[in-house]
Length: 489
Image 1 (tube, rainbow, N blue to C red):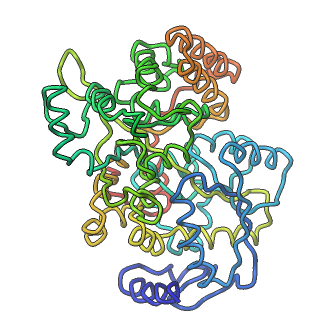
Image 2: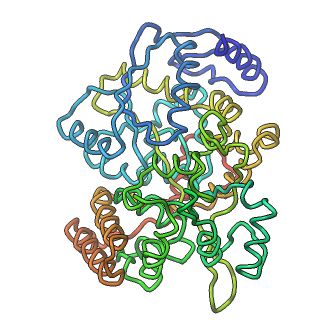
Image 3: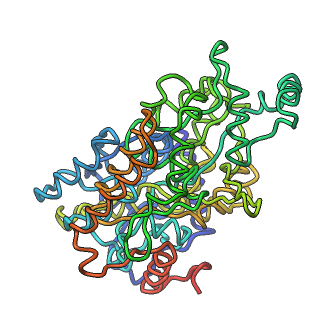
């Protein structure tokens, strides 16, 4: 019943606010405003992972809306996060067509495009745009999540930007404030710098009370590299490569960041077992009230604010990620990673199934349903949701998410990047296990250089695609599609 009411609301909203597909469209798509159900009775197979909460919320909220509007049954194969990429690579290499849509994280698209299993989306949009609106994302986010260099291959399902969650019941407690002032000689405030983070983390670390300062992810190479870069590396000035694809993990900034983030002093402010923590464990620690602060991403917001999922939901607030204070200038440097998955169409499936897959992408992950998702959960990744006045009034953090999505830095998307990511991620894990940061980071940097060399990048003179170039790719693609974007000159 709830979903029927939402669909009725969408009929009104769409008719008033959203442009319908052009009369020149030659392909009919599912359309709640007209009741068109051209794919009714069919099944759509999706290879997925619900590694972060917002993906589960999408499954609970968005998918029933699509199924009711279309008459299509969605069949999910849910895999663990660590198994998704190998599963897709194996299927692609074998020419498999056993799933129609696949979950593809940013950084994976290059490897999968090289295997020829990512379908470009231009022709679908030009024939029947539906509610897809590729111009409804920031160019940084779209270039990172939805494209394989110049090619448009996916519709983002979320855009993750770094956020910092903290407990207002602790930071606003007069007794805690007085104790902090006595111990540190300053007011208890939400950390703005690394030094303040360590200081406040130390203050709230009380194992005897089952309370620790904060927690981050160290459990897999992918996880540890994400938190290293999102919450610390970019702010310190660390980058992946220079313009000629020389890796930059042996720099002073990269080594210092590893020593801080994976050093024993920092680890001691986190709950036991921290070396193995992945998405679920760090989220659970905060929602169970075991940590005072939580370096996270925007995907966690719905669950963090859900009183049925978190015992501290009503005391949870968000702030910018603490930055690095430059000792020479005194300025606080802060930069963020822009990341996330997109759903992409398997190029190996028959043509008629590709159109079914596009039908799902344009509607289930289009503007209309994304607004519903943001309204119900506070999770938005499209510009229309992040800037909607009513939604921002209800969920103030959306404005900060929008600003972060405009400036986020994406991971490389080269075919060999997953291998390079594992190399640096494993090195960081060894630092967390007590290894020497300088030795391990230099060794990992050399390993990555060999990976790049083996791929022929140095011999061929291939240059690194910067975030600015990605934006240019997006603007060029939107122009090809006849679309305009405020961020494109």
